[in-house]
Length: 433
Image 1: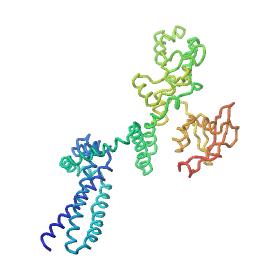
Image 2: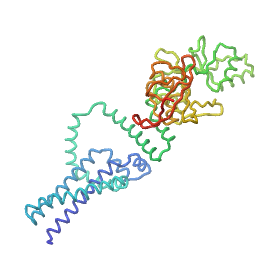
Image 3: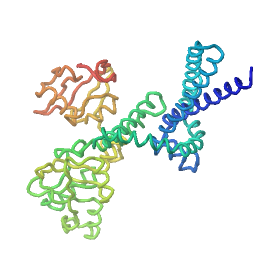
Image 4: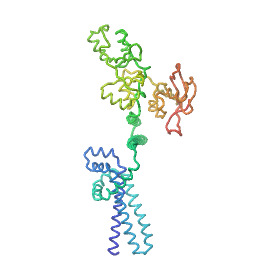
């Protein structure tokens, strides 16, 4: 073998190695976890900082990788073709094409990319310094590529792109949570909490508020002794006060303020002037998102607000605890009345109170009942059936409920039989009992 042939083969070998470097770098920088790199950078990892700097300008990285990869592949192919033509004549073109295709696909594409997918963080941290240097060296050519690409992209973007990116990020997080839950890395309860945080922006206070029919309220015009008696009956520390009619909320009474006033009155109930220490009520629109309401609770340093509709009529109330329960699940203390609203039965069916929120049932049973048109299970049944079913009636073919009990026009309990729906979400739901 002459020295010239040896040098050409050596050069081809080096070029194939460079091609493998570019291919592996591209895959690693694409597949690496941005969250993990951010954590490493916070810990002071210099290479992680370099990788994050590269990923902040993806078009520059892509331009460098593609330019470098094409340059070395074309040069390696040209050298190999020239060598084989000199050795075998015109048929050397075919030999070079077949040989370089096999070498490039196996050693410069599949092998490095497979390794980069398996160890993206390790590869990304290793190639970051070299990639930064290559970007500087190839900057003029890459800048020209960026100008051409930028001019082409200006023909297509819309104002919806940023919103789409935000939604895509949320979907990616949800997908990651679901995947890790299926693989066992994230517990189902933890997945519900993470999903609850993401859902705060999609839900409104109307979706989780305590309806006005379930509010514990007190008539401010009642005798002080009667007011104290009513406050002692309730399990809550903040009680709305009304005058003339229950929907006319004029103040909020805190039990701590009531005790302080009683102490100052030497525990003489008749001396109490409730309105003197009651606080002004805080009204919020029913369309307020839970995310905004949570921020307002923290900003205002309050824990309860009254919910009003577009006409200013009180529809219910919402507390800081209600929003937190959307994230962590039911929060109970020693004063809460423990009622089991979702009751699994021995025959596999589940009895559910009609007032149970759909989201609570989905979370408790890991189902996917639709919650866009109604808040409670009873509301969902009435919406889908377009009627109020009679006790014992099976209804709504696509929903898994049978009416158990009704009070006037209110569905108070339903029975659900779990099955597996293949055509919907593939998750456990129910069938008519």
